[in-house]
Image 1 (spheres, rainbow, N blue to C red):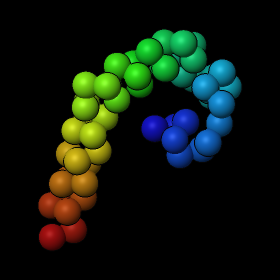
Image 2 (cartoon, helix red, strand yellow; image 1 turned 90 degrees about the horizontal axis):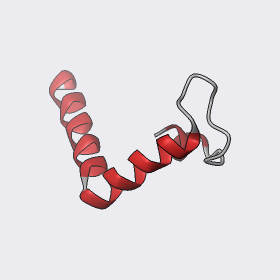
Image 3 (cartoon, one colour; image 1 turned 90 degrees about the vertical axis):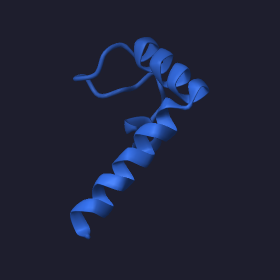
Image 4 (cartoon, helix red, strand yellow; image 1 turned 120 degrees about the vertical axis):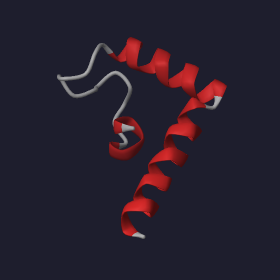
Length: 52
């Protein structure tokens, strides 16, 4: 999410994140199997429930 939001290069993550290769590995895996979309949809539902 950080990369998509901030627009930074994969090789330049903030220092509090794991190495970029590990972050990208999980991003690509979750993108390919649809997990990223599921996380997105669940976050949207949580916001809708909180705001009524």
